Image (cartoon, rainbow, N blue to C red; front, side, top):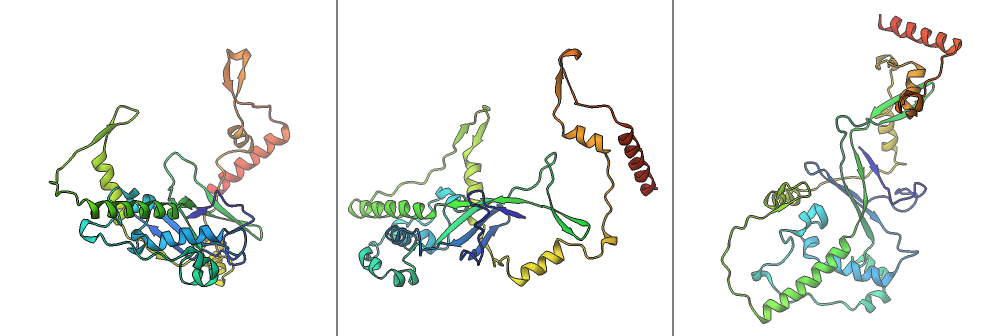
Length: 305
């Protein structure tokens, strides 16, 4: 699987040399969700006051305390993840003065009061029938070693700190309201909802809710991130991407001539002399090209025989 970072310059990779080696990789195999935690460089270009504000929000978040997630990995919050029930409503935790934390910022960071990491997340995209197949190519000596890519995953920043802030504000407002005016007991009812999509097909909201609940309940599998400069990374490179004994590899035989390959890549043009039909931009073969083509075809036949 290839991880892509569309919002990151290739000259600034997430690695130990740049001080941003990912702390952890999490994956939900059935749902195809992936998340990684990347440390933030808080020594430069960093707003310490906002770092404390969002760090406190994450620390107080009931969802984070219970090991849950926000966003799609948390079921988009449709099941009220992390929300306290009526029996769990308590007074809000004692607030810590942000100014006091700001005065001793390093100590606040060590105690977990500062947002010092960013979560990147995405969903695995696997190859589909009829779609192009991609390979990783490794040149070694005069040989090209190809390894098929089984899946892609584009990882983009996840704004869990904003979700935690909003969740905490709603929880505080709800707790205060229910403390002052306890709501009456309501009878549970089953409600079936359905909406129509743009294709006039009904979308069963119950099925969508079930799928989101399944995503939320699937546990994370936590993996160690091996840095690209780690010796284990080089060992994996040699063992998985390079074939030691080339004689055991499958020999590739071209199914096209050079001209056929170029024609397949060329854009068709409209031929006004042929009633506007689209034709390939073929050109006559020279004697050298014809001889090369015949030689290649003869070689291919010889190899097959």
